[in-house]
Image (cartoon, rainbow, N blue to C red; front, side):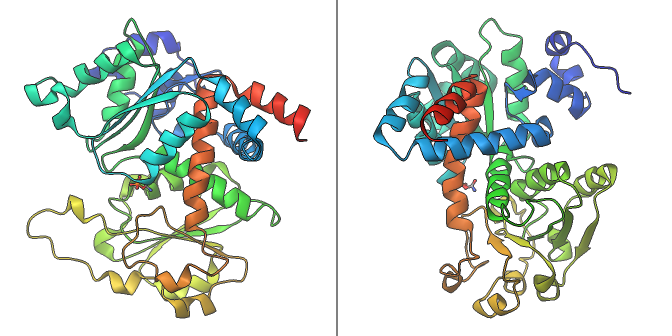
Length: 363
Ligand code: CP
């Protein structure tokens, strides 16, 4: 059995030692009472915390249907302020977090371009984020720098004013809150089909640089007998470390490029766009047409299967597919707002109040 290390000791380690720690130790340092304090990577969640978060999101969604319910939610964190620091483009993650803050009464502020902050005068990203912690109670951040959210979480944990950090997308490595909303979407879609356990999930597109794929693939290891398929051009195939994680978890998976051949076999298809913003000069573009979901593919998709996409999309899914009841991507985007309300409520320990309100008024 693994010995548990003292989270306070872990927090005090210098960054060069902390960054080398095993992810399980980092999770211990970033969690409080089994829930994330900082939300940095998917390994911080287990089956219980995922199920509780999904239940909470559903309660919030139902509470928010009435004016008294919205008023109740608005009062929960009206004494708190959040900074949304997004130095990479975003529509869904930024706006759904913004709306999530508003639902809970948190006042949101934003920086969406480092050139409008004192970083332009040469201030480091670390100092910039530390400055935010003087004025706000929560930082939600997206950055092109791999591991930067983790570094900031560690920095603030050992500062005089530790405040929670939520990673809203870091470099090519992780997008944990996208994975949470994907799990919520899968759970809702398969509610009457024994849940996520035993399902076959196929990832398609840019599996090498798509951080949503890496985060969701990791969260799916919390469910029993979920088989994963990584289907794309060999140049965009998933990184070996993501497969090592599956090997360690004993997960069955397939790495292949036969898109059409696998469509009839799976319960969920997770399409992703080519992340060409990371292209290097001289890279040859991949012909994505071979890995695009077209209207004729609806004929071979299982009747109970679902089609997902983190969005934004280009040509990976034809718009003609949008009206099919199995097309789940617009619902997925809205689920993102509810699961983010649930995550912020959990971060600030007001989840029990929400469950109590739900039991007394809606159960
Ligand atoms: N899925 C996602 O992260 O979308 P945005 O880039 O629009 O936030």
